[in-house]
Image 1 (cartoon, rainbow, N blue to C red):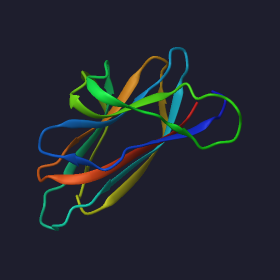
Image 2 (cartoon, rainbow, N blue to C red):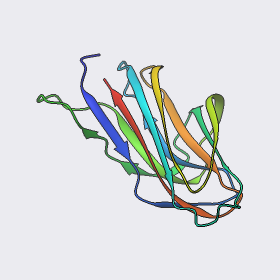
Image 3 (tube, helix red, strand yellow):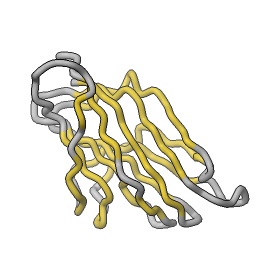
Image 4 (cartoon, helix red, strand yellow):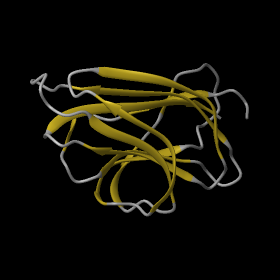
Length: 144
């Protein structure tokens, strides 16, 4: 890793009771990514709504989703190798859940992921299940 900082941030996306991957990080072959921070924000209107289940899990494919270009946040002329996907309409194949948290739909939530390294050629996705329909944004900050 050369210490090139980056961020991948979704636009607002509607989530429902059907589990959906809203953001996926894809490490390039032979390039390990260090995930540093996960950011989640909801715009729920009712304090009575149930919490949203948020899971970070390893995934083996992209499913059907749209490309998202991570943005370099550090200095330097190097080209980022990491890529991202967002808003899956067909869910990627998931395996190991590496982080799970309930988040109230009227809040923002951030957590450090400083010990999480994504091996080259691997994928990790943020899958969200919202019992009550709500809009959200998500972001992951990392380094390669």
